[in-house]
Image 1 (tube, rainbow, N blue to C red):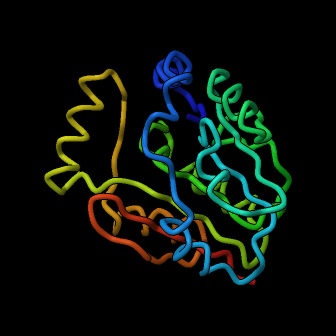
Image 2 (tube, helix red, strand yellow):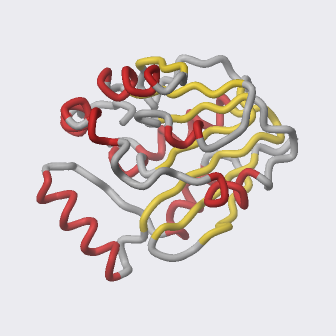
Image 3 (spheres, rainbow, N blue to C red):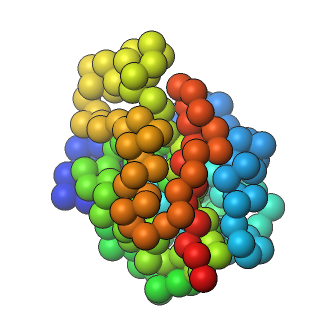
Length: 193
């Protein structure tokens, strides 16, 4: 996952990169309700903490790039034909207002400074672009099990409820909504013109 001040989770993802694609792939249908909120055509997508590029591979877009701190994950993304750049999610190697969508899928909870990550995503979005965050609700039965499991596995995860994550997205200056609720939820943020 994209790095920040802590690197513990990055090492775990590097070691398990070759097995990462054994988990169920992200499907376009899961992302579509959030992507449809964009006020522009989605042509250029940045998949932050995108690992092997499952998120961007689920979309039919002319340009999709993964930014991740784990070199093993980036190598696997390139094996799948997805461009990958090693980078820090709090300092994306992308110009201001240069992408139509930013995906942060099953990754934000691995980042030590999620508020800074969301602010950085807002910076790189073009007006009308959309941030899509897929996360897990720690207040559900499955969410509590996931939190416990990730901590047992050695991850330093920090989870948000959908409402709390929507507040983080709003604080970054984006118009926030929750197009999908439940254990696995989606928060979207649109950068207004």
